[in-house]
Length: 430
Image (tube, rainbow, N blue to C red):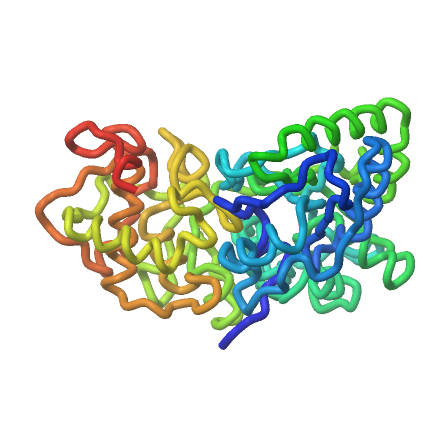
């Protein structure tokens, strides 16, 4: 079943994109684009108009500069085709330290809005039954990545941020994980709504809205940075962004941290089965659920499943065609989180197991066609991910059953993340 993903989430960090940028002194106005479907588009347009005016640069906001994309959002190919021809600058480009896959291919202004993912619930609702809580999230966005960490929850996965907020407003869900600008946009469109809003506690919560330029737009970048700095100093920027800024009380009142968790079937499977099973007990399809010890930490295995070099090579090819669009060609994270480094495989203290990751991947990925690959193909991709995070290949091939049933915590491999058995960086082969 094709699902029309949140266009904003699917365009979150457009890795490897080269945007042709006009020089600041060009006779024709600089063309500014905003992301189609972004809840912050009105704000992005207003900040862009004032910032370019403050910088003394002729500019115009153009409609349709960025193609609306397909069922899997705005792709790199589509952006390469449209952005260099239809616009020169992107306003409202969301950046994150966890999912910034742009590398050196783009330049960015200073941030003009800190935009968090928040937990939203009606301010007047009574205490919900904690063992059966419906949580709404936007499919294919960071809110889904945050929501999947919830325990004792059933998921209501929505196609857009507006529908995610609507799920709470209408009573379909007791709570929602959603990007805060979506809450603001919903209230502006539907009138005042009384919500209890709190910042979520997750690596995927924090984002900054910026202007994005091509690498030859350094002069334009400096002028815009100067304008934004001046606007911040004299209060103009605060005035423009006031309604979109998460209140300090909501920023401070973060949701209480949950007990240590393990990934289970994932949100797509949770919706299909009707509930996300409690991590504290074994379900009938054992192997999908990771048992949790009494202190809340996942019960860990002692070693990763074996895999061979042929699987790593094949897994890399499969990853490039099925996963790199969202997770980045070098596993650095784009619209989806990084699949290497401490955010994915910390040196110690991981809450993710190899079996949990494999099960989540095989039932939910790729986002546009979950479960489209064969079991062996998912196992090969898992082998590639393990090798990229420091696990050395062996002589035995990893089977899907071995990957699915593994309770080994995904900590950085004994060789150190990114190192192969020969001691050379696996990044060199990517």
